Length: 199
Image 1: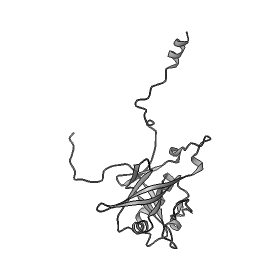
Image 2: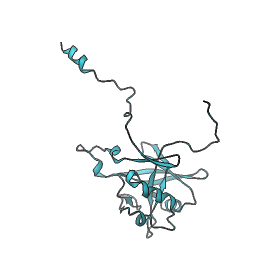
Image 3: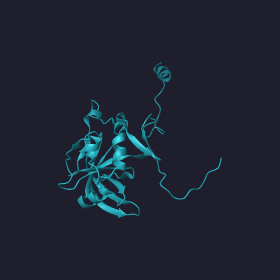
Image 4: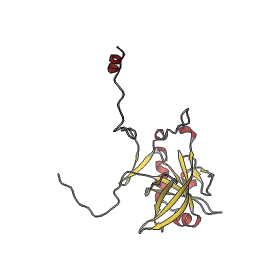
């Protein structure tokens, strides 16, 4: 079997399908679903979202300089798709999806209460790249649903059945294949070997 060479395109999959909430003062809040998003720096913590200038939310974020990234789950799949295909010019997305707008700690944009993790962001720079403009943003805080904390306060985010977008479809994350560094981690000694060492 050979391989075909295609023209340049966005084929980096899967991607997180996040709901980005934003709001102008004294106007109803809006939600846009974004897949062109990612982590860009650890210290300071920074993320990016890339949005077409013709989208309704683009101008809200450009004017206010802030937004919130809300992670999505299997249970939020319908709402995430709706917020990606309907314009905030025409619909009150919080009302239509029955999502709960919750006050944020550092930004005026509301958080989506049903999301397991909300990331409050302030825009530092806008890169006008072409079809999409990238909002390079600093993370101001991370809001975590306590339902996903274990008895020691550790976040069990993968228990939330996070959702990703891949080549036109949404998927729920499934079976764990290994944790970070598993390829070089030393394997524990077998019980048989441990018994021999005690003799």
